Image 1: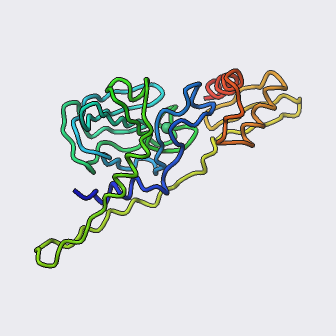
Image 2: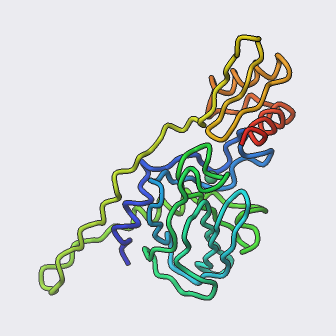
Image 3: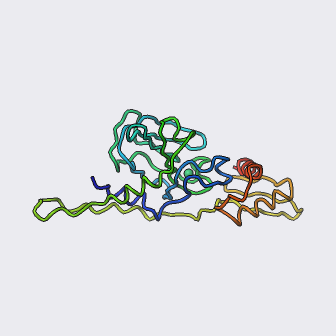
Length: 237
Ligand SMILES: [Zn+2]
C-alpha cells in the first residue's frame, strides 16, 4: 500500500534533524538514541507505521511518549509530544494522527532544539527510549520510497489524493538557544531561554566556546567535557 501523503510530507528527508547516534552534551555518553524530525510547535504527528499502541506515558525529559508495536519485535517510539490522541490498546493506521508536537516552552526536552519529533525504533517496547535502539532512518527512507503508482487506465479509480501539505514549518537553526555573556565585573554567564548560570572556571568558558563553534559535531569532546557542558545546561534550565 502506498504511503499516505501526510506521512510523506511529515517525514520528508528535508525535515530531518539530528540523526541517530550523534554525540553531544544533550545526549550523554550513548549518543542520540533517536531520529529528529523538525516540526512547527503543536504540529500534528502522523503514525509512521500502523500498529497497536502498547504504551503511553510521560517522562520528565522526553515529555509525553507513545510506543506502537508495528510488527513482531518491532516497536516505534514517539517523544517530545503534546496532547496525545491515542491510548494504550488502540490500533492506529499509518498516517493516523497520534499527537501534536510539543512547543519550545512545554517542557525541558524541547527547550534547546525547538519543536521536533524524536522518533525511535527498537526490538522491545521497553527499550525504544532507553536500551538498544536502531537507527530509524533506513525504515523512514523505505516508507518515503513507497509512493503511489498510477492505476492502469482500465481500473476505475478515485483521483489521487493531494498529499497533505505540512504547515509552513517555523524551523529554527539547530543551535541551542544559549550564549555566553561577560558582565562588567568579569564574570561569565551561560544564558539560556530559561535562565542563567555562572561559569566557575576559565576552562569551562573555553569549552562552551568550542561547543558553539563546532555544533552539532561533538565528537571532539570527551566524556568528562560532555559532563561539564551538560551540567551547566541543566542548571541553566
Ligand atoms: Zn531526538
